[in-house]
Amino acid sequence: MSEPRVFLLPDLGEGLTEAELVAWHVSVGDEIAVDQPIAEVETAKSAVEVPSPYAGIVAVLHGKPGETLDVGKPLISVTPLGTGVGADDAAPAPSPDGNAASSMPSGSGRPDATPGAASSAPAASAAAAETYREEEKAGSGNVLIGYGTPGGHGQARRTRARKSSVAVDERTESASAELSKEDELALLRTRVPGKLGAVISPLVRRMAREHGVDLGDISGSGDSGLIMRRDVEAALRTTSPAAAPEIEPAETPKPSWLETDEKQGRDARTGLPISARTPVRGVRKAVAANMARSRSEIPEATVWVDVDATALMQLREGLKATGAEVPGLLAFIARFVTAGLKKYPELNTRIETADDGSQEIVAFDGINLGFAAQTDRGLVVPSVRGAEKLSARELDAEIRRLTQVARDGKATPAELGSGTFTLNNYGVFGVDGSAAIINHPEVGILGVGRIIDKPWVVNGELAVRKVTELTLTFDHRVCDGGTAGGFLRFVADAIENPTSLLADI
Image 1 (cartoon, rainbow, N blue to C red):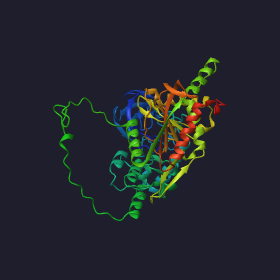
Image 2: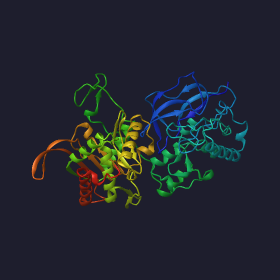
Image 3: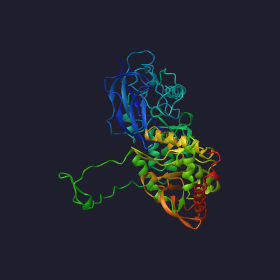
């Protein structure tokens, strides 16, 4: 029987380098088909089902549910059933951006490697590059469900010649070892987001990130401009002087209140028993990092106003009486927000900081309106793309669709990370107001509180009205209080007089 093929965890898009293994859909000994979902993994963006590029018998499951796996590390080993197409000939499927997904490297583990192919390094390198390009054109058509891939033939091709008997894990684990050109080609796994010509391995990308190297400024020395480890090392030598060997600082003793009596399971600081320890990872880890960055980088300010929403509530009730399909309140307010952002575009921007510390305000021709959605996996912010072009009914349909895919954990990175302004309806939690944290790198977030009966002065007389509170938190670097107050008042006036902006509903 042929040796097992090892499928490596593929690049999941958006520059993510790790994922948590949520659950296996197969067990050792199961027979699987090409494109059959084998595992569910959770990234900082969403939950994703990973299909197998191989058909055969499951030999090894590399990891247990709850473990965090690095991109490019083994995920599953599959023993081919035979030598026909769809088994031994199954080609590694491409990654979501069109690259070949991580799969069995060209080495002794490849059952279809050509004997003697390692005798000529240039020939092997050229062959590897050519087969890599062929894989880009082929693909199983379903590398990551929800992302889609090119091809979709369900067929397979033979790939990459044998080059070395050294296992890929040994090469990637030993960052200090010198890699030959062939070895580096065997590490090609992922793309730098936004730079299609710079294909690199997770090892190289991590090395660049840890040393602060911008991969967009590097010209690759490999075939077709591929960025290799040596390119990152060269950039380090040219951009920074040779540094003296770092001396590990002496370990600082931990405060006594940080110590824990493991035997008793009791916290030393509080004296209370420890009931649980929950790792911060996945969506919660991403939210924590983004909120901390927002607080540390953005000089924010908050303005708020109470609004009489009686007319808007009466409008919705009137539409219901006619039997017409009535959008939700959030869709109406979203319609007012997009109109307000067109009048006050300063709040639909982003601050970008250059390497030299200079900053510029980036404005957008269009509005991607994000909205906060609470899910079982934590708070996520899907965005309605091109929201300024949609009516209230169209906004309502898209908000409902995105809410559902977000709660199912199937929202794509583009749907979760492309917003330019955020709308947050925390009134559903029964609260009136909140000084929200801006969703970095945006510059503003509008919060809507619950709508309740309150005493209100109308035409000089006291009346009971439907009142809500709007709260705008904005980045004081892009605008001053006049702009922020003008936008907030515009939305408030639209809620109090909704027919003025809802001719299209």
